[in-house]
Length: 356
Image (cartoon, one colour):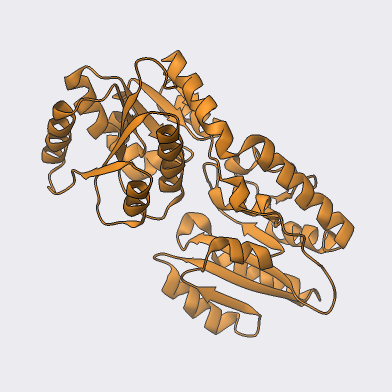
């Protein structure tokens, strides 16, 4: 049964593409509908991946981004919400917080704003507008503790709650991976080809491991502005190594079934969906030590965390033995089942509703 006073919720989305935030929006709205809430999504974009997915689960999606003018977009959203007022407005992207807040404050409706990454990146990407995006919502929800902590340092302290990322655990089956000398160890990288993800380091890892005598195969799945540069780098400097660069993947579960290691090499993250999915699927994690990863990985217990690529490769070599490897992946699966399942989403969200 919905929390009293919050049955009707409007979500404001900056995009409905294939990103991690959009997937979390899909999980949350779908769970809310199943629990009797009335949910509508208002989006700055249209005809993107999750628009049809949301409609399939009974969520109305309304486009308000037709005008290039931010003022006209804000007025359009205000008009739409005035015609069908919700009891709560939840902006799911940081840069959409101001749109949601203007409409909410004019209508006298509480507004939740979002921090989807580490706050540092939000500030960098949004410049001076980031102060509006942070200050205008009545409260903020972050998807990681370090993101919430950074907000206090970068901006100022305000009411902040944590709603961590989740996955549908039952869709990511744990698959036991066999390690033997006859077949290469399969490493993958999944993400956007952008600077903050540092995808070029994956090429260096494959080279490092191969040069040290480990039989490895690398595959990269993603798209982004660095795609052409990576292709040139691969062809010019890494063509002798077993690496494939791909711009899309089949069903991601099929990728995880074959992979032994997922390499997470970002400079920063919120709580990376791809790491959660891989941990649930029996794929070991080899990650650089950025803030967002410590909540998921305990070094040499359920994955590997190191500050340098060379030391990360040392760890992969050390744990490329069946018993040691299996211990990592079994512990990783337990972590996800206990802490990052969609089944935890509604209780956690309703706890927030009860406090605002």
